[in-house]
Image (cartoon, rainbow, N blue to C red; front, side, top):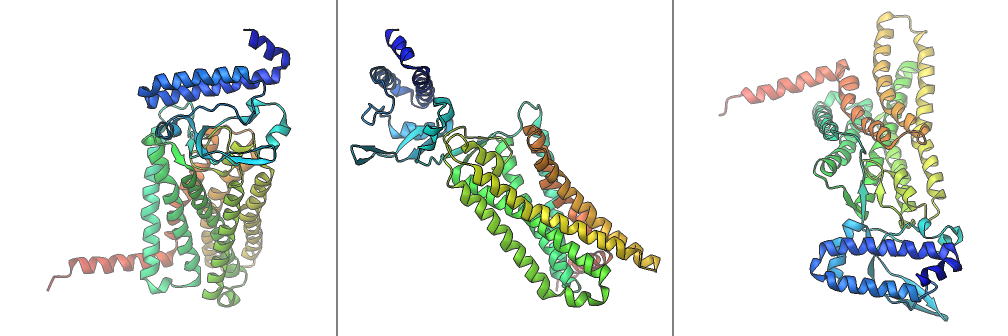
Length: 437
């Protein structure tokens, strides 16, 4: 009691720091004892010694303070439960640098330890946690049905887009510049849903919401690469429609195999470069606070905001705006401009049949563009007012619905593709009924 009064006299900041450390140590000890109950007596004794050391030490930052040594195996087993992290600490005493052994330490919210922002700026150790926790939906009953719905949509998308790719590869009549972009769209749809939906189902249907640091960044990289690639592929298809309707006599000059491969390759390179910048800027952050990602996968925004208590996240925030403008807003503006030109050109078409055919193709593409861009733009513009559950629903539907609808709305409505698909079916049926010699 007397020691507590002394701390109170010295200042509320030091008292708060001591209380915060005590609470963290107690929470850490509780989780470790659950894993190794046979060492309970030893842990409690050392915890008691640690508290005594804290009471005897007026500054809580002395480099020669007594540390609790706990068996490494017990710590490693408890790491996923309390968010422990392996890191090397460097302390300087009298001009000498002392490096301690690697140990597992609990994650600490620096803002709860001190209200002085200058103290967090002096932290140079980068903390990379072993695990993150994906929260998913909160306070919504029967969410398993939604994840089952996502799995059904994924299966339909996988079958439909795989069928499109097979037909394009088998039928030589579809080896045209336009179908290079269509094949690329089907490929990105399959890859995007495959990189996202199976992991979501595994996490939330089987309660495996812990994800390792490296696995989280890998998941983030592939999901965003394929999502952003869909934006550029829709842009390439709008360019194809623009040339076909506005410049029909120059179509085979402006839209060739070479130009389509160049456009597609440039799009892939640009997307990969932007997402690599995402990941590169994330690796410089120190995650010393909460490790709970408020999303349904390793989403970039909720992830880098976890490092705000002890790292400068302004570059990450600025980079997010720049990348979104490059891969979403600029392609969307280009698509709007192309359809303004297409609308003007439609009024100059005299034959009703040609006009109807052009409108039908453009309508299918516009539906896909709306399904893709509207939910993403709503989520980005209303990020501050959307709840976590609304954001998860919006982004998850954006991720799975366009890949499922692309083969149905855009490809299967094309007469040329339907004729090729019937030809492939007849060829397969003939081989199936052919007698074995």
